Every structure is written in C-alpha cells, then in structure tokens.
Image (cartoon, rainbow, N blue to C red; front, side, top):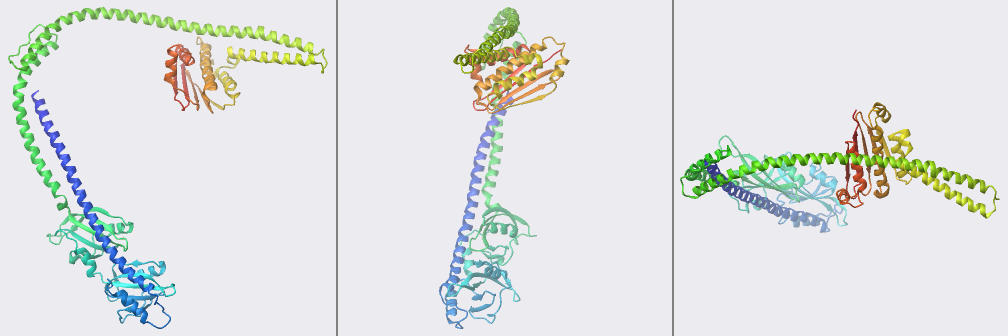
Amino acid sequence: MQRRIVFLIILNLVIILASLGIISHLSIDASIKRSLENRLALANIVGQYIDHVLETNLKRLYDISLSGKIDFHDGEWEPEKKALKTAFEYSIFTDRIFLMDTHGNVVIAYPHTEEERVNLLSIPYVRRTLAEMKPVISDVYTVSPTRKKVIFALVPLKNKNGEIVGVAGGEIDPTNYLLAHAIKSVYMEPDTYVELMDSRGVIIASNDPRKILTCSQQNKFLNVLIADRKGSVINCHRCKESNPGNKRERDMLAFAPLSVAPWGISVRDPREKVFAPSISLRKGFLVLSVVSIFTGLLLAVGLSKGIVRPIQSLIGATQKIARGNLQDPIEVSTRDEIGTLGLSFDEMRIRLAESVDSIQRYSVELENRVADRTRELLQSKEKLAVLLREVINAEEAERKRIARELHDDTSQSLNATMISLDSIISRFSDYDPVRKQLRQIREQCMSMLKGVHRLVNDLRPPVLDDLGLESAIKWVLEKHLGERGIPYYITTKGDSEGLKARFHGVPDYGKIELVLFRVIQEAIINVSKHADAEHVFVSLIFGDSGIEIEIKDDGKGFDLEGVLESAREGTYIGLGLLGMEERIALLDGKLNIWSEPGMGTRIKVYVPILT
C-alpha cells in the first residue's frame, strides 16, 4: 500500500510535468517554426527586390529595340549610340552595354572600348540567347584571358522593322553596390548571414564582404532548389574562421530562388541561436522535475505511514476470511475512518458466515435441479430429432407414393384417353369441325400428361435413383435455371460414383444423397424465383469422408437475419431456409448462408460420411 501511494503521487507529478513539458515543447517548436518561416519570408522579400531590379534593367535593354533606331546596315551609328547611352544611364550595367548581331559579333558598345569589335559566340549564355531568343541572365562568368568576373544580361534585339537582328546585352560587375545594398539594407544580428548566389553556388552579394565571389559549401543542393524554383529551410554545417581548427558548426539555412535569374537568396543563422529558447526551457524543466519528484516522494512517505499500518491489520483479517476463517473477530484500534471500516468489516463477517451456510444448502439443491433439467432437455432434443427424421421420411415416402400413383394411374389414364381420342379423330375427315375440336382436346390431354410427368419428377426424380446425386443436381439446374435462360456453371471435384461405391455398406447413404438433393433443390428454386440473378455457380466436392456443395449467385440478395427471425416467429417467410438447416442438422452436417441486399447469396453445405 505504501509503495502504491508513493507511486501514485509520483505518477501524478510525472503526468503533470509531462503535460507541461509537452505543451512547452510544442510552443517552442511553433516559435522556432515561425522564426524559420520569417527567415524564409525575409529571403523571399530580398529575392523579390532583386528580381525587380533585374526586371527593370532587362526592360532598359528591351527599350533599345522599342526605340526604333536599330539598323545595322545604314552605316549611321549615332541613333544606336544614343539608345545605348539612354539604357546605360541609371542602370546596374557598370561595365558596358553592347549590341551584337546573330553571328555573335559585337557591333557597337557603350561606353566605347578597344575590344568593341569582338565575337562573343564562345560564351554559352550568348549562344543560348541566340538559339532560344529569350532573355538570359548568366551566372558569374570569368572572361578569358583577363580573368575578369562578369554577369551578362542578354535580350533579343529587333530592328526598326520589328525583325530580330541580334542581341542587346549588358555586363554587370558582381560586386555592384546595388546588389550589395539590397543585402546590407536588411537588419541582421551579428551571426546572421544573407547571401545572393548563382546556380553554381558563387556568392554574388553578402553582408559579409569576405565571402563575395567565393563558393557556397551547399552549392550542389542549392543548385537543385534553384532549378526547381523551390524554397526550403534546411540544416547545414559551416566552418567558421573564428574557431580554432575550423570546427564545424550547425546552421539553419532559409533559401528562396529568384524568378528572373538562376540565382537564390540564403539566410543563415547558427542553430544554437535558433534553438536557444528550447534548450533553456528543457534545462529548467529538468530541474523542476527533479525537485518536484523529490518533494512528492517525501510527502508520500509521510502520508503512507499513517494509513498503511491500520490497513495492514485489515488485510490480515481479510486474508483469514478468504481462507474460510469466519470465527475470529476483526480488531482495529484506531477511531478514524479506518476504524469505522474495521467495524463494518466485522459486521459483514458475521453476516457472511450466516449466508455461507444458507448458500451451501441452496447450492446442493440447485445442482440437483440443473442435472434433472439437463437430462430432460437432452431427452427432448433426442425425441425431437427422431420425430423430425420420421417426418422427413414420411414426407419422402408420401412423395414417392404420390409420384407412383400419378405415374401408374393418372398418367396411364391420360395415355388411354389420348389413344381413344386418336381412334375417334381418325373417323372424321380433315375438314370436319368435330375433328378440329377433338384435336384441341387431345392437345390439352397431352399438356396435362406433361404436367403430370413434371410433377412426378419433382416429387421423386428418377435420375436421382438411376444416375446418382451429381446427375440429379445437373437436372435441377437445367430444369429451373436453364429453361428460364439463367446461365449456370457447375464444377465437380472428386469421384461421386467411387465415393458411393466405397461407402456402399454405410447405412442410409441413399438418404444422405436424398437430403442433399432436397436442400439443393430448395436453394435452386429460391434462386430462380426470387434472386433475379444473371449467373449461378455450383461447386461439388466429393471428398474421402464427406460431400461439400457450394451455390453462389450474383442476384439481389436479402436480409438473412431478418428472414430467419421472421421464420422463427412463425411466418411463412424463411421456412425453406429453416427446413434446409433442419435436414442438414439430421446428418450432423453444416449449413452456412451469406447474403446481403444487393450483394448476392452464397450457400455452403458440408455433410460427413462416417463408416
């Protein structure tokens, strides 16, 4: 008891502390998530600003074509120089703006340089612009042989007639103050780094000037994000120069790709700074947990001593009662609630001793009554089984007698009547009206004779006695399904004749076949009348020690429980199913039925054959 009290108090403390810990952890995680989302939003804002700057300057290059002054064949270059000068002013093209023909030759540039008449077709971005005729902003490109770092902005160039005649391009210094200004204008903490990089990981602008034109350590992964135009927040590592030995530290990096250029903006923070609130809370929670558990343990030990000892004396008394000792009184010295409980236990002991004697006497009497009632039920069940078997036998005997009388008397009488009619009909000419009426009477007699034959076959089909169970089942399927146009499929496994020959000496083997035939006949008739089935499947398995039959249709099905309940209440609905169950039960077999409205019906029968 003492251990339980201690355990429960500590458990409650643990549950409370765990709940608080989970809530605090979720709150900190949500705060961290918002912080990361804010950093990703910051990267998107900076990226949108740089996209705006680049779009504005690409528009300046497009304005050269819109000026309507471009003509490479008139020999007059003043209009082109004026258009280049207008585009160059207040742009980020710090080096120069140039016009190039479709062969890659620089036709004119502003400001004028000695290398004005050069061919730039070896530059892949130039070839891409000429091939696709779409605007292109390059990564940081190293121009040989000067090893100068340049960023190209290229757009298709049209002449005054609107025909594409080349490319208008501008060269951007990667260290351009406008790009760096977009980064440095964002307030960041000392350990936070914002970087603009191209698709190869070369850093174009950064709030740390030492990193400009260096390669990012995550260039391969970020290149994939730039290609997919997808932002992300990831864990990464970096080597800080301030740490001795270039120790690797973990960072959180938020990355947003640009839409105009194949570049991206990254915002990097030390992981320790991002997760510092969570680490501090976890440490405080650990200290609080240790103090709370220790305090709860002291409280539990103090409380349990005043409760456990009286309860232990009660436990000893109840153990004596459990062993059957109802004579020794229960003694508890305390006068609190536990003492009152002890007095109540003692009163209960006295009454329990009186009740035990009464229960023992009544138990003996009840066992005798149960034994007598069980014997009566078994006898009634045996009588009911015998009676049911006799009813079924009498039913089959009566079927056989009626079939024999119909065949021997009624059928023969109809045959004699038809012979007499034939002799009378032959006395009249073909044109005599009486001959026609006699023929109609003969056709009615023939129809009656066929009906009698069908009735005889239904009451006692000769095919069952002559050819066996398998042929009788095929006859039932053809009669009730095939003649109605319902497709049926029958499969047989095992040798029915071999099984019949092997169990030829078993008593009532013929009755087994007859009962199975009646059950299947009832099932097939139900399918033909009520199921509206489109297909019926029958499986016959003649095993070594029994016969298994399965009938399945794809009809409308029915509520099995409702039908059986109606049959048990005495209505006519479902009596056929109960009759099937009773017949199979007399053979110690099993009948299983599965059906739901709209799902078809499946019936499975298994009857053992025991020697």
